[in-house]
Every structure is written in C-alpha cells, then in structure tokens.
Length: 106
Image (cartoon, rainbow, N blue to C red; front, side, top):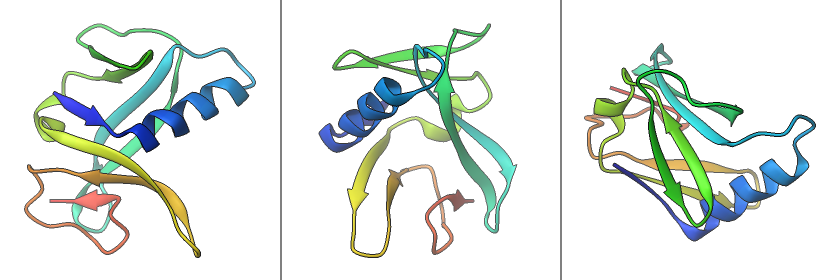
C-alpha cells in the first residue's frame, strides 16, 4: 500500500527509540485541511484501531486508518535532510497537486 525508504525507516526508528511513551509504530493520516485541500498528519502510535491497515517495513509498523487508505495507496514516504530543514517527504501518485511545503495536497 505504501513504501518507506531506508531514510524514512531510520528516522522512524530514531523517533521510536527516543519516545517518552513506548509506541508500536507510526500512524499516517490524511485529513481535510491545509492550503491544498488535504493534509498529512503523522504521529507515534501505541495500538491498532478498528479498520486500520498495518504495513511493516524493516521492523517498523505503519498504521493507516480506513479513511486515509485510498488517499495514500502507492505512496512513498522518504526522509530528507537539508541545510535549511529536514523532514518527511510524501511522493503520492494520488495527489493532483500539492502546496510548496509538501504537507498538503489535492
């Protein structure tokens, strides 16, 4: 359903190891909002919820709620490090357009 690059897996593993509360993995959600219509939300997750799809990549669990699944099918998640900023990058084939920050799409 989605793919995490090696850089993204490494970033999630780092976040999980530094979490104050033990977490099972990463939740990726799509919500209405942002400057382009939909926005990505991410956070550490402690449990599976009803309707979740769970993807495992190199020991990392990624939780996707039922409503977000069609929006992210085929997406690749990367983590990039730059001079001015670092963060997750979403390469989503379902996005017709996105805003300049890359966190919002339509």
